[in-house]
Image (tube, rainbow, N blue to C red; front, side, top):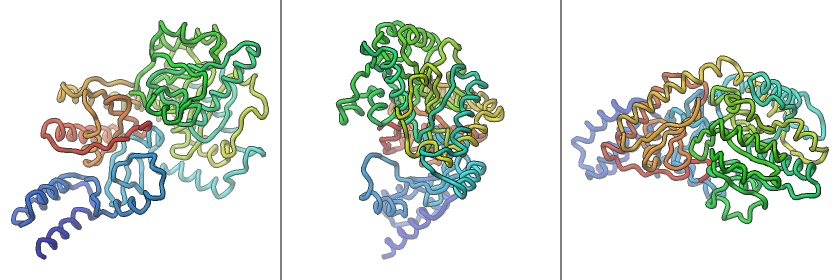
Length: 484
């Protein structure tokens, strides 16, 4: 009886609402356990949890109870770690156990202005009280404003100068679907008597989960369960300049590429590759599409990632989403007249895309993300991350290989599976995700402070030390990528 009572008391203490005081808690718990008659393995488990700021909730927790109630009603398409988040502010999230986490993921590069940004919340509340949806059967004051703003900001910030019009939709996959359809229409229009329908994308790319965008995402693991794919897609090697001529032919209607591959491992396109790609597309009359859904909208320190490249490689279409809504579902496909001249009424549409609520929110967000306050801060914050990456390479030379990326879309290549590190970091109060093969991905809110970067990287270093040096046994949670 006394044994069960002691265990229950310790369990309640461990899973009560917490603040970041794990050192004090560990000391007091260690003292309480010193004279305990609990089995050693139980004491070791209790001591370990007490030493962590945010240990994953156990099967007896409130979180586990909620998850177990809900999972039977959800299609099992995701693998998630144990915490359940219910609150957010700035660069922090809180779970249902009221434990705080520093967020280096920003909802996979979505919450660029942070969680529950005051300005975004105010705009949503105001517009929701006025008008949310009318469908595209009617005009509203906000779709055109957002479309114009996207074009003007693209011009003003050094994006592709030929941009003229925008199509507003609901997500990144939808933005890419529109781009694929538009390119197919251009191909049929300019070559009505000869086949011009082939589409080119690149290995390690990620363009979405709908059938067209999935067909442009050449990974057999993801395509095979839903095969056959949309016909006409072919794949090349990212940054392979020599292969472009044979890859892009007279039968190619479109080419889609990420200037920085996010999900594929934070691989940065070389200027030579994109310039050669642009030249070849022009030669054969193919539409060049830049998927900037993850790398665009200020994440690199430029409004568009391609703005940092020579103008000779500018595209015909740019697709955007993620940060465009800061958590509200919205996407955009920006085109030039070469594309738009072939699109007629009825060629494409969307029920929810361009609704007043989404467009007003996105317009507010664009005005913030294009500001010097945001753009000028990115290189300094990126340098802080790079400083810490170098420190990690020196501390763990056999495990940490190299850093890649630009601005605040960064990847740290490891020689080993990162999932134990992701779990160990989470249990210490830091959220970080992976991408590619054995790569840690860093896409924090753009409003993150240098002090918060220092704090998070200190937690990451501690997690690496605990796993790689001290031999802490951590169960990694698979599925911490967008495509898993």
